[in-house]
Length: 310
Image (cartoon, rainbow, N blue to C red; front, side, top):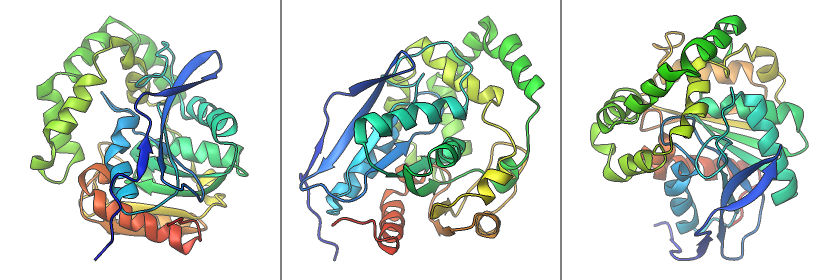
């Protein structure tokens, strides 16, 4: 039986802050007792009410199992306790922010832990700062067709200017943060089991979507500023990469919508040079809905790369 070590980690009760590009950016640290080994930096998903708190269950499970790698959970600009400027955010913006975070607050190479469509941020980081990114773990990354099909930049800008960065976008966001929409969307698009859309999940989404200015990052995502053809960058990744897919993995986008987990595994293994892949129970938010299995897969990957501190 796995030996657990409860109450051996220090989680910052209040966010800490650093400055990037004139903006105050928030993060928290989960530092196990006698912390050692390569730090882990998480990238939370972009969505209504989603922030660094998405990783809370992962942190608890990781530390309870006695793993000593320190965990850093930043809020991407426009989310959570970071500043909320009205900007058309892109993965390159957020990658530059996290690069500054790693440089000023950590000061050594890290492993990136990415959820869903935050994968493009990890790609941009690995490309521009390869010396700072030692390995990458992907939770439910987009289907290969989504990651390799370019969007129309003109259409992206029109989406932003004519709908999302207008009163229409504000009205849409107010509707999208209602309990009815959040619960329905979570059941239909994110979770494998409806019962897993629990009170903790709903309270997190409510709490972090109250400020109407949190809409800018979400609407930038919906405008498609994260969509481009990443084929060349993905085929050039030098870092060991683990892609973890849920058995019920699905896509919102039409492109790749019907790709089962097995096909996603084959695609990632075929095109990313140093990729490994694994399928675990769950659907699209594995660190939350299948925490134990996700932590086990991540820890096993760390062990294979000689990165696990225990």
